[in-house]
Image (tube, rainbow, N blue to C red; front, side, top):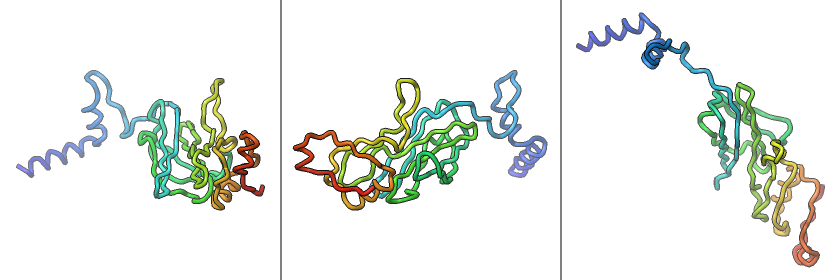
Length: 198
């Protein structure tokens, strides 16, 4: 009995490629089967992305799309504008990627790019600082005219009086140039901002 089944399977496979057999079985009655093993990815775009940091320092990227974009490449950089280095290759349908921090102690941006040309840039919203609990990048938000705020250009935070030496070094490498303090004179006097060279 086993020999008969194996012989029948061997004849079936030698008579037609497995992909054609599977496509024929999956095709609706009266329609021609699709050719090829992989279906071509539909045109679509990324609709959102985010990055979350775990306690152990690993980063998880999440993204959403309007359609299956097929294979994607994930890049990282210290700048949101240039210097991209390939980090990984995966598929858009997985909806994300978990990775070690490619550059610990520095601000990192990620770009996810599909073969179709669809692309999205993202980063951690909340900066991993010890002495400030609400220091956030305002990049990635959609504007009223359909554009997107650039990452790494505008931040908002709580008071900076508690920044540690490593926090200050992190901010110096982030490209931060100007601090605008909206606190009252009394608040500034009681908890002054630390000196951040540059």
